Image (cartoon, rainbow, N blue to C red; front, side, top):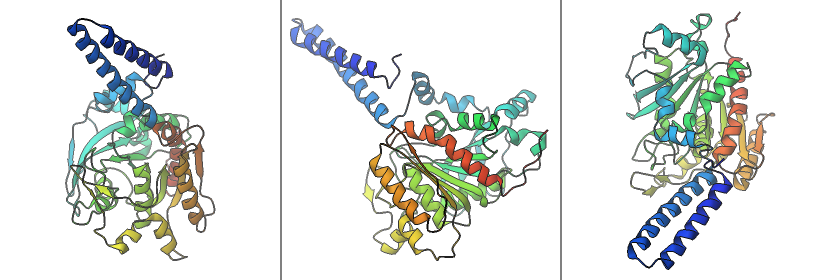
Length: 379
């Protein structure tokens, strides 16, 4: 099958490009040369796009690519319109129809919220997946644990759904009783694909950390049937989102009980603002940098400090990612004897690794989150 990452497809494109280049040289009529040159350009461009896709492991099938480009996966999962979350508001979750309720009880429901932070004054899109149990009578008075999922950069929150397949995997885990029910919260972590804020409060700029670690959990807990920030909340992310998860958990250890870093790094780089401008997140303040560098944070904490439980992962072929995870794990093990580290064979820093690791992370994290809550008995 000539899927987006097929080696045969790449060989075929190279052959087509070679034939077109020969036609440019051999054709006597200008119109044929121009046509061949145009087709060669398109072929080369397609080869480059697919090369990036293969390197990062984004799309395995044409269907997943088209679904993402058309936003079909997100829109088809819910008929709920955008919901504005202001102070004191509560979000509805269904369109009121019996059919939607029955479907939600079987598959869960996906919302797209617009959340404005009270402290940060940031307004962003947030996708929220409510598991089937959220709509089942046995859970009607149950407040669910929540997991905040932070995407990488370049990226956007729906990458968790359309590329990483988190909702599909979670549904399967719940059906097989390998995971416990939880609400998945997937925010826009940067405010745009070309922006990288690393979930930090930018000096003189957006207060991204405040929005993601303080404002968003508070608003979600106010609007939906989830627990207040604390031991019933987890945070996880891949790549830049892995750094975010580690830093958010250590900066706010009383707001998160669990953290997962997939191919994360543990010391911040420069931020990238709109227009591509690179800036220091801390305006040259060395103390702020130390307070937002997980490797420094873990060393500076008092011996008696309680921190969230950590789960680490990286593609086994990602040398830097493995080294970073192992160093961070050594520091964590001075405080937590059991720190899981998953190395995915044959994978680098890519969605191929993260798709394999996400079910393992969800199984581990939701079981831990559930221990702090009384789960209803279901017949």
